[in-house]
Image (cartoon, rainbow, N blue to C red; front, side, top):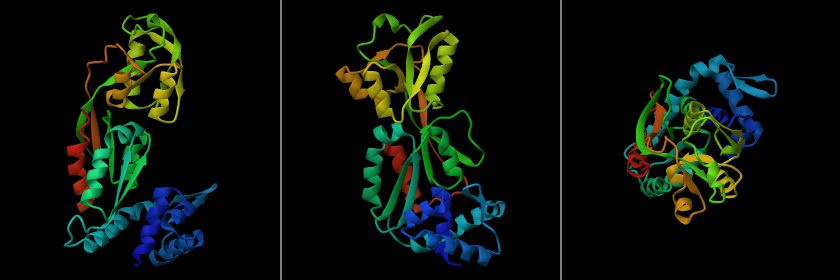
Length: 296
């Protein structure tokens, strides 16, 4: 069995299409199509079916996916047998929300690339609600996230660090409007967010509902940096992890707004699939995460 065809099969799953897989692997789309046809003929199975304009994995494809993962992991184990960390090859795929990637991952990335320079480090910044699925479908080896209320049985999850959340506003906001302790109020501005279903966003929503503090409809933007910029320009307020606004609080471009959530500690976590082979690069990453990404 040609492992290149298996790598192509996995690339299609990870990227979502034959064309994107071809781009990732530096193939033509016809090469990807030919390799999948070869694999289907060799296995006597239909792996993909066209539904509308999309190619979807068949049930047979889903059933054999764990075996394909085992074969590719075995090939990687053989390739790296007897090698030191500085010599091993392969890849490590991480899925991380925007805020954690920007503000806490740089020391980890520097340390990992120093220890394993020949390993391709692939970091995808995705919404926190998508990280467990990325780990389950194999598009990520490790996910770093804010702690959740529920995890699938197939997911291993461990606490990584702690952090607090803050409600922040522009220093130009009318201070008489920034009482978020007294219940039964109506505020004339929006909560700005990049992840409406993010864990700490949901916690703030619960708090506001409990207090009966009503805001204008929320404003959604694409990144934590855009959130901060909008708040600085007095377009609304935002709830953010404390580690993401250290500089802005120090220089006065943002100001904290007191709530009863200020003293609550939340946890960051890392997750991986319980059936995942812990490769040397994955073991290194887990150790370095504990050392460098323990959010204060």
